[in-house]
Image (cartoon, rainbow over all chains, first blue to last red; front, side, top):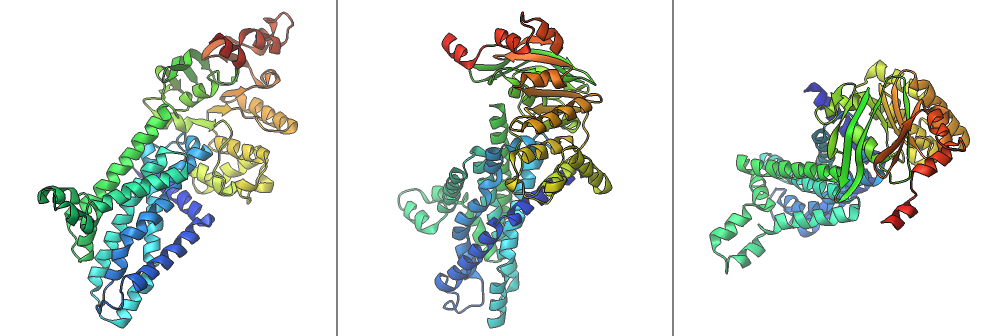
Length: 248
Length: 245
């Protein structure tokens, strides 16, 4: 078991280095923080809310991540396929799942770093008012899980093709679908002609439904389970895609 | 050390490798010859466990590739066709990565890197990003990766492709020297390479082995005594294959 983790650790290290040795990481971090700040203060009504909370920040994250997470994840496997390094990686003494998990963890860690770097917003709220920092912490946990779910889906689409643009677009579409089935303007519309229980059942598959719990400060094991299942399923699918690709 | 039995691979309706069998022992350097698309790379990929076979079996050091893929991969050093590498990394960090993936740490890792850097003459480019290197250096960087754990078995897919004549000569010499203590398979288009570095050669055409013998034996089978003439007499160019189809 120790060897399993040693190999995964080596892959995580290499992937993280790949982010930070290229401009990708810095461009990503700067754009993320600029946009997050912009949405929070300009569109989120941070000041108009009249409450000390990060709701303005967290409400926009599912939409911001919708584009940024696939952008961070699109190269994971398609780049390996394009460069031919997938053949190097998978003929080293590691199992496919180790490579998949290693690459995923590295990118997830990178996204968590991006989230952590949004701390000035937390500081601002604490200076201006007296927020419930427990709710903020649970909000961040939800955000990290959301990023992980999007990322796992991006891994899967990235394994499908050597073309990063295709991987990106497929990931955005799939993630958007996971948002929309629980997006209230849409579900309200659907509820007019579909039976409410059906709409509600479909909405249970939405990332928003489960993300909202965390934003209210509720750490529900069902929400946690949901995000972990999405990740596990998408990574498992990644494995199937890679195996099929190799089998020809 | 390497035993291939009735190995076949089909991609859809196309049979890329068709019942190939051979063995390579320690101290042998097997040259893998054949026209483009004959199934050389596919066969090598099946030996390294990168792609599964459709039928037949491969064992390396007595271990079956399908049953024990990780153990087999530990024992193989592999240079894939076109020598891919992570181009955004420096040569040194790429080799560190390869060493760690092979379970080499600390002092062991440092020694392994020093050894392959010497063997592949990479001293002058260690800190350089692979992106910025010439084709010859990139190729040798990938070769260094294959040698880093001093494997018992080496699978080299066109190790001299894209090198200049001096570099070709060096790689050939390296292969011949290492051949004394390892089992090596390498594929090539260059027939004189077979004579220069191999103890035995296999010619493969449209997925089947059409000749297997020492370079001298194969040469003797052509009236002119030239390996090239023999090669041309038993293999078909893709133009001929097209016409036949």
